[in-house]
Image 1 (spheres, helix red, strand yellow):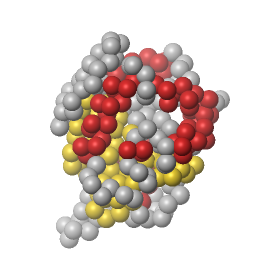
Image 2 (tube, one colour):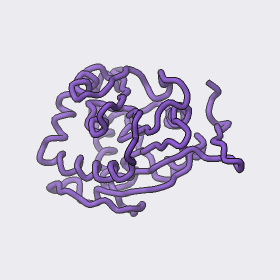
Image 3 (cartoon, helix red, strand yellow):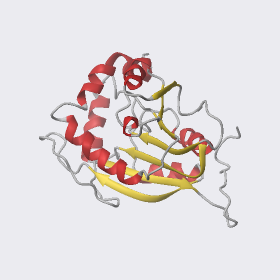
Length: 232
């Protein structure tokens, strides 16, 4: 069976070209509006997990990008991303090093979302933030990609889509709390694409939802590590 990384290796250039297409560019820019609203000034050092071809990480010069697909990383490197080959369940970084971690449209492709979030919590510096963006299961966009999955799409056949409640549960189990939500992509996924302004909360029916996450704190103000996460 072909691995997910191999699928993205084969389709890296086609996948990347979508972001500049008439259909893809307005959607990408709608997502960027949310992302850039959630990431504060002074976000470096920043890591994107599942960086792919670097379309999101490139907005933050000097960012690190991790991905298992070599062909995608070659394109990301051309955009100035400091590329690292690897998977989110086992990050090759020391503890408490990144001020910001991005996980954009990646949780649906990983083997173990909880393990990924536990690893992200481990490498996140005190006071740092995580921005996770995902396509909610059951939304119009989620249904579109679920259809692609069931039809055997090379890129999506192994994808697993999650509800907001699912992602919040993973975050809680990893010792993270949601501090802000944003929503976008309310348009019909089968119609002409257009740029959307972000909504600064979770709105039912959104095709893409962003969560800003931080580490939970103990009563004394210390960040804590959940028992759900394996010991390093």
